Image (cartoon, rainbow, N blue to C red):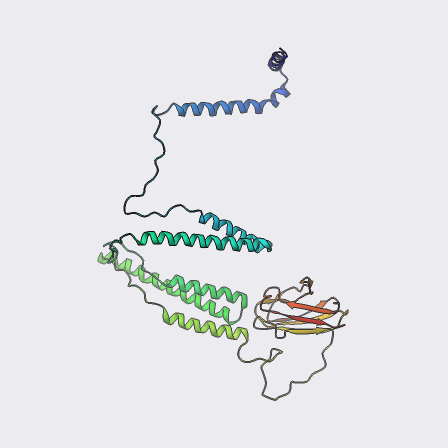
Length: 355
């Protein structure tokens, strides 16, 4: 009885809002009214579509069956597992630690599983009789297809050398630019020949396709030689250089004498994407000066790290050839690592700070 009384009171309260309107309360109920309208519209639409078409229900889902003589590989979860492994691998490259190891293991197991499925599928297909291969003599008359070309591969190799030159600079960059330009010009020449054939077909009515290209052995050999020479020149393999970065003098000649070096000054030379010395010494608990001679056209710097790998001095990199002097705060006695933060794997050494 009390429940019915509460419901009736609710109806009276709602009626009161309509008979003696409280506009503020009515505006507050607008979202409710709009919701009722939307629900009514959706219900009407569903009911309308339910009454359209034949009354007979459609048959159940028909399982697809592969026609005879056609092989379709079955479904597999390997791509999903590979995506998860790749995701964990990239997460590990960012955060390091156990996530990287887990990603490598997951990706390796997925690839092995995927390969096993591929071999099983291949063994299944290998036992079926093979149809005779269809060999086409060429495109049908009046149809023009661009012929095969090695230009995309050569252009890709040139761009790869070009980007390597942007990192290491020097002769590698020059060979990369030359390689890329040569490949693109050859590609443009192929397009010019093809265009001439199309223009000629407007008169003769017959479109001739360009012959299949031969392997670009000469071009690849020449540029492989140039890349090797450029790497050797950039790395300083020849002419031979002394430990301080200069050209080696005659055998038995003494090093030129000069004024004694300031013990508070460290001289560092970068050449050929490496430091010319792997060991440095400096006094302890005294401010230092670093005379950094960057002889490369690439950007380098010199950072100092303590035994725990924490950076105790961070130099601002600059592009050479140039020479700059930097002030380094006093360092406590001990062994430190110095490296170029841009090329840490190629340019590093040890700084010993005396007691």
